[in-house]
Image 1 (cartoon, rainbow, N blue to C red):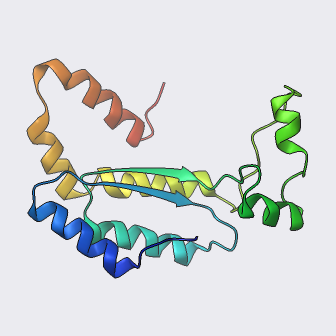
Image 2: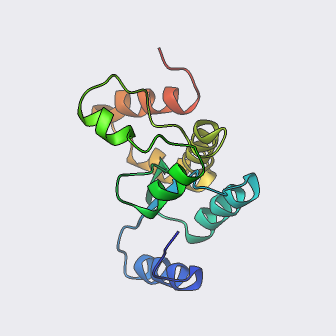
Length: 147
């Protein structure tokens, strides 16, 4: 959605960063309008291709005064006064996801990355007695063993 670089350029940027030993971070959004399971799978494949050191996924959120918000209102997915009501503390529920199962796919995307052999091996090397409990809590969350 409105990217300023091609996938080829992004692949090269991540490759050059790795070669220069610069830690990489990928920030991705899941659940845009017209997203499909296929496009999400393509995103997950792209992440495997660029091999970031860290990453973050977020659900597409139609923020006020954005094209995404206007399109969401036009399609009847979001109330045009949602953010006004939200700011006035009208007990607004979370703005609706624009793609069904966004949470499911975001969870899958995180598991796909953090449970990959490459990341598991790298993170295992970083575990020390002082941070063991943090890693244990993270693992429980990834595996769905939250309290």
